[in-house]
Image (cartoon, rainbow, N blue to C red):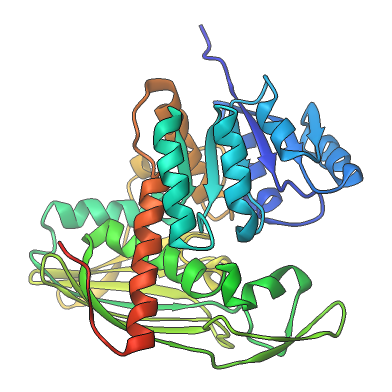
Amino acid sequence: MEAKKIRVGIIGASPDRGWAARAHIPALLALPDYEIAAVGTSRPESARAAARLFGAPYAFTDARQLAEHPEVDLVVITVKVPAHAGLIEAALAAGKHVYCEWPLARTSSEAEALAKTARGAGVHHAIGLQARYAPAVAYARDLIADGRLGRITSATVHAARGKGAGEQIPAWAAYTLDRDNGAGLLEVAGGHTLDALQHVLGAFRELSAELSVQRSCYTVAETGETVEATSPDHLLLSATLVDGGVVSAHIHDGKVTEARTRLEISGTEGDLAVVSTGAGGPAGIQIGELGLRGSSNGTFRDLAVPERYRWASGIAPDAEGFNVAQLYARLATDIRTGSPSVPGFDAGLRLHRLLDAIRRSAETGTRQHLGG
């Protein structure tokens, strides 16, 4: 007998633009475990348009009503970060499973409260750290765990986004320039990149960091309004892993030429490199297709990633939503079996606390010891 589909309500499913339309909708449509039951936006006309476009039976402007609807099993939150906490609380109060985009919240204190509530709610909660499910990242993690590189001695990270490369910024992205909104370079590019690195190599033991604002003023493309950037656009990081290896990372926005990611890992018996390969490269490690390169006779060569690392077969590997689909596929298994394999709100809280340590180091000029 065919398993009942998991019915999804998506908050932030704009019919015009946005991450839900670019990634979540294609991912869900590609997976047989799910169906889109409801969409929610801030305006009635856009909610109705989204329902028609995405084939959802129900449309809402009230997130609480969406979460409480009996034909919604999983609430997905894809709106701006400052709204996450209230929407998550509404979904948990309704007793629904929750998938929230990263960052989980604006601050660690918000994230801590959400994680505590989620632990007591008896539901599955997932945070959108989908870079873990990129096939190249997952395969690299297994190769390292199997000892193929020997003892890990170092990792070097170059992660550059094209965002903010010019003097103008689109209106939808202007809010990310305000550090109080918790959605800037450190939180988004830094969070996704450093989470993927730790997923592969293990946690940091200590770190030193520098944050910098290199472009302090932008013009909003649609209005001509001038906005100040208070959120850092460069992160320099020096860290030591719990296992003793050292890490050097430069993560930055505003890359004019060949924005991309390269995560190079060295061991006593070889090297690996996770690299951007597709059109999604300028957007960060979590978006688009990644390649894997390994060392052979002193030179790098491309490594074929086994097909077993691609379990979301209904969507192209170079699609923006592919890694999101990979995470959704694992979440479906979790919901059906009761196993907690995907990163939940506690994982999100740990990552928020790592970012706090980076901020403290940058503000005080001191090395931060993280335990472990």
